[in-house]
Length: 101
Image (tube, rainbow, N blue to C red; front, side, top):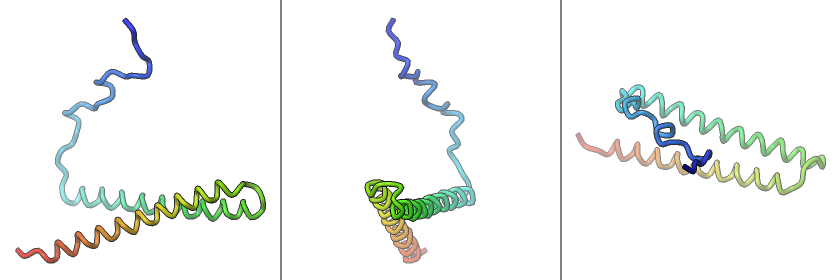
């Protein structure tokens, strides 16, 4: 029988269905979403700091401009994505506020 070391059996890759938590309280969901947003914003801030460090290294001649351009572009895209997510959250909030009970 031919086996491939790169392919794991399905039962090792997929978690047991009984172990998946299907229900969360609204407070738990809110806390989870808030922690996700905080970590995402921290990552964007870390990318910005990384760009500043790379820019300083470029100015003293330690690295080439390609690394600076790539890091700056990644940080710019992350910031744009963050702005779009913020806009969608505000739109969703406004839509909820317009709902009549």
